[in-house]
Length: 223
Ligand SMILES: Nc1ncnc2c1ncn2[C@@H]1O[C@H](COP(=O)(O)OP(=O)(O)OP(=O)(O)O)[C@@H](O)[C@H]1O
Ligand SMILES: [Mg+2]
Image (cartoon, rainbow, N blue to C red; front, side, top):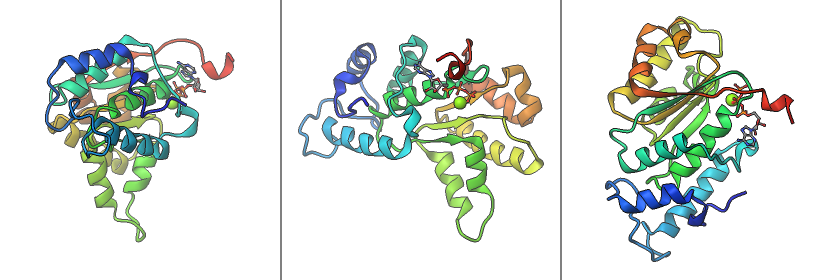
């Protein structure tokens, strides 16, 4: 697994571009290099490594990508979080969408402060939001709504209902309204999303997302 404390592990192109820009306030201060100082590179790297280890599923723990569209997106998110578009990775099963999304998260999380992105399947999000005596679903809703970056996998994969449409709408509308970057992955073509998620959610996704179509064979069957 790549050592996230090793900043040389960041794609050199992305790192070079980040260094050239003036990072906005809420992102890492690249000038501070004392490892004991909170806000130094080493301090953030440590935080990010711990968070990534706890939150990236093991299959994708070492995911990397050489796709320059992902590098460009990471660069946009890190340098211009208010204007960066979200990403919609669309394609058939097994083409590497989830792998690519975790690679993008690892890259962007290394430069992001705080590093607390959230990631998981849409089904898991809906599970968290289902009212239960054992958890505060509104507090969890707030976490999904306000995380620095949100990755929602398998969008539109489950059976939808009025309730699931409403919950997804709340999360996506909040992130849309507040210009918060997201990554979505789906097996649907973008033109099918309105039928799967409702017209209002699909309309917001159309405006907020750059679509990357990930084609190819099912990698699970071609090993
Ligand atoms: N660039 C890559 N390099 C090496 N392995 C990869 C790469 N992309 C994907 N894989 C591997 O291929 C398999 C399928 O990838 P992944 O789970 O990302 O597919 P997916 O497009 O998300 O599929 P689904 O639509 O079914 O969720 C996984 O085992 C993953 O680790
Ligand atoms: Mg997937």
